[in-house]
Length: 137
Image (cartoon, rainbow, N blue to C red; front, side, top):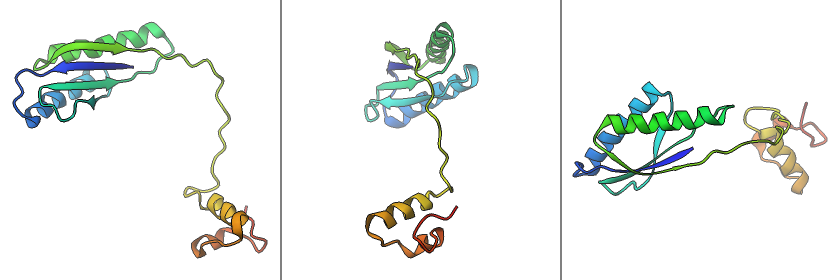
């Protein structure tokens, strides 16, 4: 991931700043395939902080993509890069098992928790329970 600090010297309003940033973000998405968002300095019209993150199985490739984003920002014009902070995270932990929710709204889980807590269940959730107050399978 990267955090890129910019100075937009020709900007005289937040509207002009947003136009420059929109051009930068669109070009990064088109040319590198990476989404860039404004992550700081939102209300200062001559400064901006952009953030982006990439995922890759290869540390070198991830850093290369971040460098490509910076090149696109520099080539876009309208903003000068004044600072870059890059960080690479490595995930060595094994994935934890995923347990799907029994329905899309999660109402069954809510109904069971409510029934266990004090026995009262909202009427909208009652269809999810059997006569013993347990979630229907």
